[in-house]
Length: 144
Ligand code: HEM
Image (cartoon, rainbow, N blue to C red; front, side, top):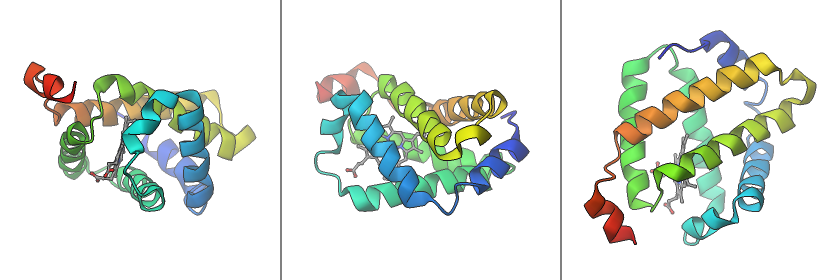
């Protein structure tokens, strides 16, 4: 992964202590922009889900310089998402919402350079998660 690790880490440091604000905005925006994904969370306890999502962002940022460990964690996470009924087409929805959330929290500190770095990082995370996911035709059929 060739990522701008310093820029990612320094921007994340600015929201590290605002996890509730981050996840409240993230999920309300995700469900407003993409109502079709809300049913996927129908049986999910949202408070603990929000904590897990934020913890996984912390894990990503803390392990940017440790790609092997990060890769294992993310392929495993991607494999579990198949079980949750998540499809590859859902990943850009979460990606767009994450960027919107950063922009909202960082306001004027959210620059085009940061947007490019986070877009790139989310692309790398998605690639690793999907590498761990089995979307064979049989799996897709089971879900339909
Ligand atoms: C960067 C991408 C993503 C990250 C880092 C992430 C992170 C997580 C984490 C940490 C969990 C907790 C359960 C576990 O560890 O297996 C989780 C669960 C879940 N994620 Fe994601 N996720 C991502 C993408 C997505 C996408 C694209 C969707 C679809 C809209 C989604 C929907 C869900 C759902 C529905 C659950 C809850 C499953 C349950 O009820 O237990 N996630 N996610």
